[in-house]
Length: 178
Ligand code: IMP
Ligand code: MG
Image (cartoon, rainbow, N blue to C red; front, top):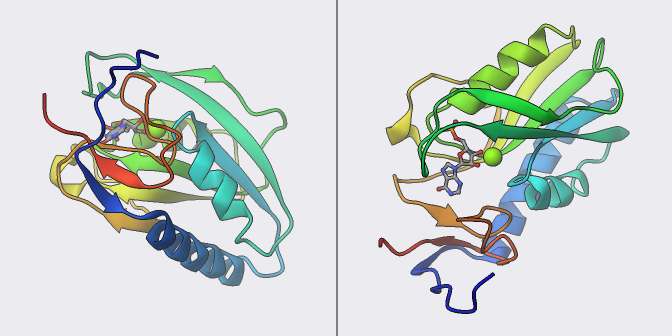
């Protein structure tokens, strides 16, 4: 990574405010699924930090799975054409699955994944997203557990990247416009 990478412009959510919100989500999930066990299906790469914190706030038996996806499109624009590049290690049929996403932007990626995953016969399938940009919606997706609703700005940090950089920031920042 080049050392000249510009610093993000402005902090949107501090590490502390993210931690508070993630705890709230974990508590809600723990209540909603009480007495059951979960599959936390994490969409790589952007969601790995969020998922790592979220599972430690869920007081239920669970297993973690990862789904690698590559979307074809130019720049920061999603096309909705998604390829699963890494699949789960065990079937999700009959399981209670929560799909964990970093951000729902146009909704095209999550909509595609939900349609694919439903064909595998999970007992239930819900979505937990850290961020949602409703102003960019192209496909309506119901987000069952949502961290924050944000404006149409490109955000990095806490697992989210721009050209693979910034994932290690402990907070969420807005990237300066070019
Ligand atoms: P969608 O298919 O348009 O909903 O795109 C979702 C994916 O685009 C996310 O999972 C992210 O990987 C990426 N993405 C969308 N907006 C941002 C952003 O502001 N920062 C970083 N990645 C983003
Ligand atoms: Mg993503």
